[in-house]
Image (tube, rainbow, N blue to C red):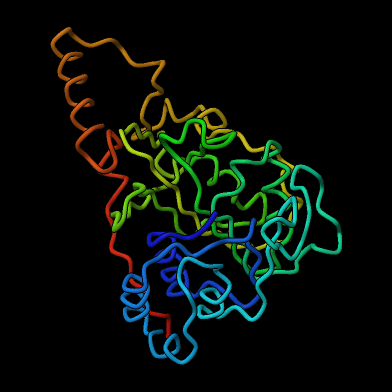
Length: 290
């Protein structure tokens, strides 16, 4: 578990968005998998190079010094065992001890929750760990990670988890491929689009989410539902795309054309056959908010 060049860049971007790094908990003790040149280049863009030169730290080591550079005064880590030196030992398949509630300004999952069988309980615990106005950051598998863990995750899931009914708001959500220097694509909420945001592609793809706690609510008191099933009225609203099962079959030529287009997109476009109107490429700004 750890932050590669894309993960480090996204954390620097979160700092630019004024995410509060003061009291950080990472799920699993995270490593920093970077080359020195990559790190210094990003820190230069973020205006942190001078601070790093005053107190340099090794790359390909634990990530606490990097998080301190982003503003962390406290950096804890939570794991099911002590084998990587986590500061808190707890099995996220089990309920969270009450004394840990609302303790952190930021909880970061850098690739752990897909390995926890009781995912709903684990993500609820992560949300309960966050103090009011604090943040959650997730860097988690989306497409083409079959066998990596128990789960792969969709944007819909995180939009429904970090919803007002649970006291949260999604601030940003991006998809990107598992390669150095990957382009980032912002992902909208299917509820706002009134249609599913679907992606099929040929490469391992990560999902990055920033959410903020805006109200004190009982998490999952209302069980999340996929938005198109909860709002079936989409099928009747202007601009609401019909559900796949309601589409009329096209001509043979139309079907062939559609298959060829999908094949091309899945293998040659970054974001596969996702709708380019909605899953849009963005530029990350690493400069800190003023």
